[in-house]
Image 1: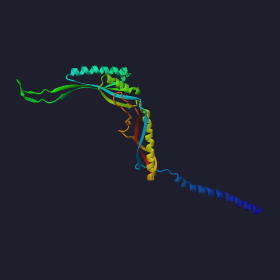
Image 2: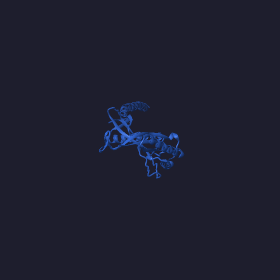
Image 3: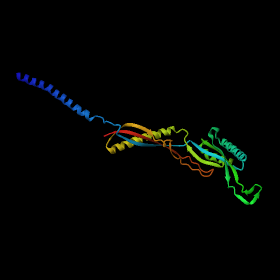
Image 4: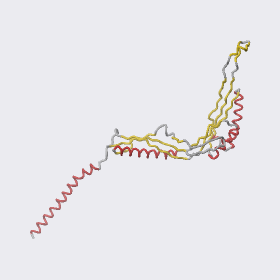
Length: 261
């Protein structure tokens, strides 16, 4: 009986000792685990700077056409009269084609004096005042230009035909755009941010460093106006084919990230 009691006492003493050993081992291991999970320290002097590029394709919904009448006449009065008569016919043709007054904007209205030749003495022709001179030719150029917004893209060619028939003799081309491009800009901007992140991650991996949070973001000025890849379009003679194609809006951002060894 004494032997059994003694063995039981020894076993009872071993259990607390074992628990103490486990507790001590856990205390010793805790700092090591904490050191393993310690986050990297980022310094403002250690950074990666990249430029992200994003694009968004969008179909144009309006066209702009610059239309004008130019008249060359020997007097200002004649130039003004002819120009105003012809321009009135052009504006009437625009309205008949469904163009609202708010979509017709004057962009140039000018009269310039053009001089041809230089006075040349003619000794063989004498006058009371002296030697005669060759006459110099003067003309006045009257230019009246309007920029027209066409909201029905299928009617662009018809509008051009109508104004040419009415007397317009200056067409400065057709351009296509989007009246409200905020949605396309937002898509391009988001793609640019994602592209910047991907570039920074690739550089960090190649350099053997850890990529940290964003330090700064800035738009690349001069590009985001927005950056257009010009709409694919064709304009032949009046009455020819005019194709709006697609606009590609581009966006660029410069992003600086913190890095750590």
